[in-house]
Image (cartoon, rainbow, N blue to C red; front, side):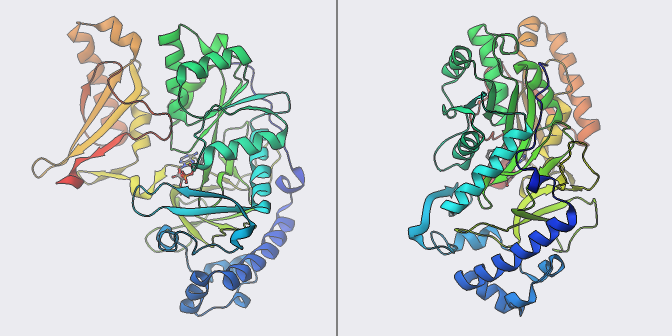
Length: 445
Ligand code: DLL
């Protein structure tokens, strides 16, 4: 790894705010946003009515639990403008989140929202050591996906230089990284890994030695510690996990600091809770559950107790970095992504964790689940790494040994037997944005 990125704190007055003062600020903002949502958005008024409450019933953080949840479905039903709390003429930017499972949802930003977004993204960059003088290669998709512009605004706010290259054109990414000497890479973790392999294998460039990337801000999808290690080694940078979602702001809800021990939540803007997804009740301290977020300052599309569908747990111990904010564990996955095979439940990320522990396994894999008769069958289609693929060509015994090792790892870590199928190097799809690695054929039967 290259020199560790030196983290710093962009807005210490908020990020290091003593808890009692922060709670006071959160409660002030909560009262205001609750009244604002009630006054401006009929959906909230109806929800409050059904729950038998008015904004006057919400005064403290403890009262938050009285407020009904907002679900993704509420936002879908209200598409395109039903959740808008500000005047449309005050909206400066509109994003629509991808509608893979139905209607899209609208995420709108007023001037003030864009300012908040820039500030929280600047905090996120600072946490990864980015400063004025850095050149950020922003390889998140620009457009309606919030990744591109969120990382763009944050870089401007911090005074860094941005190369707004967006996702794709991998050869150009590597050439420009070399020519311009970009120092920070921002993209999805799957694309970061792909870029590293591409540089080495197709262009004969070793990014760890020949590029200046010192840190990478990777998010938008769940990724394992093993993938982090691989990316760091391949690209010669320090990798930071960053979390966010369009319905709340885009990227910018939480980020790792140099300790890499959970993600600090920007709590003065996003009020977090963790609930049991089945009962809707708050989890006990440290328990894992579904993350629920309330936006405290959002003007255009504020959300109250939005169920993110993402599974995590809070970390309450103090962080040595000096930030006083609550931390969350890295996201295990989305509740609706959890797989159940032969009765065993697990996250796709756990499969990745098991897989990437095996030398010779590449990070290009696909999980296929089917139920040809009564029983579920999980097949793990995997490319061996290029080195492995080339060294074992034709040697069946070596390939068999690799299959056996993967098989054993998956069985012991995931708890389910998988049929391991090695496929030629380069045959599985590559992803510039969020990776899609699961094919659940049971749903089509
Ligand atoms: O993915 C915003 C974003 C862009 C975050 C760039 C980080 C970096 P959406 O497209 O609305 O927004 O998707 C949000 O992606 O609910 C999670 O399920 C997942 N997700 C985002 N960040 C992480 C992460 C952006 N660091 C959905 N780890 C969320 C795991 C993540 N999952």
